[in-house]
Image 1: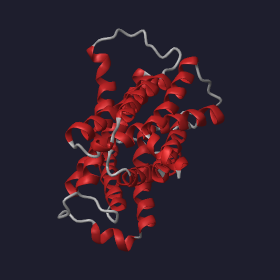
Image 2 (image 1 turned 120 degrees about the vertical axis):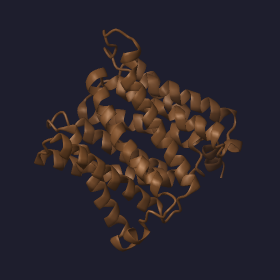
Image 3 (image 1 turned 60 degrees about the vertical axis):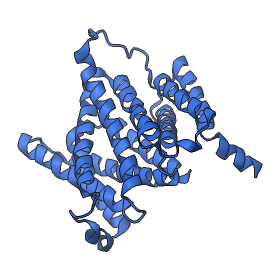
Length: 298
């Protein structure tokens, strides 16, 4: 539970960093690529250079997976930015958070990790979590007047699909290859490859990188590294049971981000959002009811 809470806090810190980008007129893409470099530096300092370098080898079974994840990371962040610009924050938020459907389905029916530990209340909790995410993410005036057709859904679906691929891949890779000693190093390698890919794009497209964008990347990079590293630790703590972890993680991030937005940015909740918070609290209880009962019964 500790790693889950720390992962939620790291993701809320990322939300706060992104939330401030508009206020300080930050160019998103250069800030994101700088953030990847800061992730590498943060992870290397956290683990220690002497431990990182010997473990990074193309002969490691997880090395190709790290290359794949680096590509997906850059693509997902870019598409999330485009979706926010063209379809709005509400659409991008729902698409990214509802992507938990993919790792949940894979965990339950493909990987079949920890499914024997789920009871009826856990399954109800998973469904409740989906409802909570939609309700909390819904914003007044979020509906667009643009004609709804197949083209309208391309960007949100891409965010939904790639977000799900990231979580599903982390679930499988952690279950299949990673040890406790390798989790931090694997995270460093993902961000290092994402930085190289992103830097190539910046050079090819001659994108201007300003000092303020680099500083924003610095602020974003530290929590971003720990958001992935701690997610891997949380997966291990949950016995790689993504069906339990990801609903809890996503509703925790939404509740934390919503409370932060209310306190720091004076945002207001609609009646629908308040219902969503109530559903989220119910989902948390349903997903972790046995642990809660054991705790108070002890």
